[in-house]
Length: 196
Image: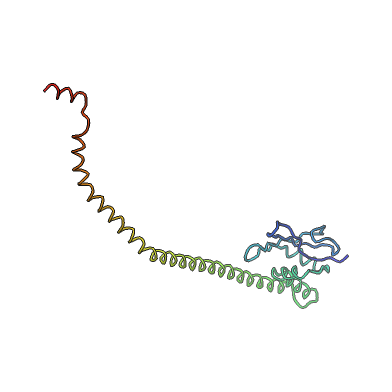
């Protein structure tokens, strides 16, 4: 039985999520597997990979062949390097302490690279936001400048209509006393006039 270390797809349409598994080469892609080694989530940047390195190395030592994508993931997490170092220990080229020191140094270097990438991505994202905000401000200022003549015309028209209404109001106040004289009298006022 040949064993493959490969990805098993999970998740929903458009949002894949993978399990890293050791499975019989004849099994279906999402079918029966021998052991789950970890997970891989490519939906975020940088991708999130959770891998049991010791189990992966054990399967590699037992002859499991990784697929191309799985090999890239194992290399990214250091399982391929650890497998290489274990082979060196078995041949006598390295001691266990030397191999552990090399692997620990590689892990630290990889962690530094990942943190630099995350910092670069967050910086690029903040710069993109700043550029978008500046562009939006420029567009808004251009709109305001384009609208100034129209606003000034509207203000002038409003001022003219207010001036016309103030000119019409004295005539209305002169007409108002005449209207009060022509207004019908109340019955009490009519009786008083009749009494005089």
